[in-house]
Image (cartoon, rainbow, N blue to C red; front, side):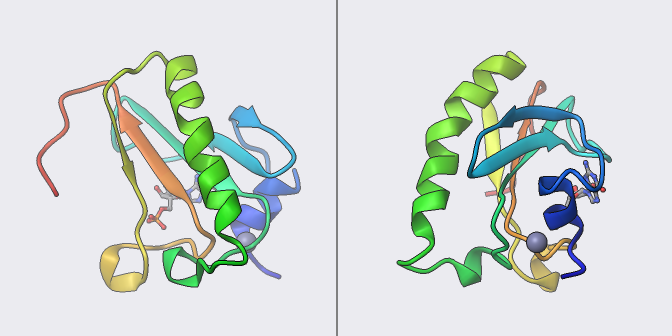
Length: 110
Ligand code: 5GP
Ligand code: ZN
């Protein structure tokens, strides 16, 4: 599959890794929108939040269990977790990912 995040998960495209285990990977966003901007992805291809099902949701729980640890490693206590689903919501990479944004006072969005 021609998916950039599958390639990053497979190590075919290099990334600056923050956390990795058998199921998930966290790495710095190439175009940071905040002083701290990391993406957390499942290694398995899930197209986005709309493709989460009862069958694959365990990896999403696993991501959220890892997020406090990742944030602590990044040195942020205050952070925002965002996922964009669909082009109109700003999704540009169609492999589920959660943005962790922090390191500054973030503007109000939601
Ligand atoms: P989206 O817009 O889909 O919510 O987020 C995709 C994010 O992936 C963007 O913030 C973009 O900067 C980041 N990104 C796209 N391609 C690459 C890449 O090759 N490496 C890294 N580290 N980040 C990427
Ligand atoms: Zn993928």
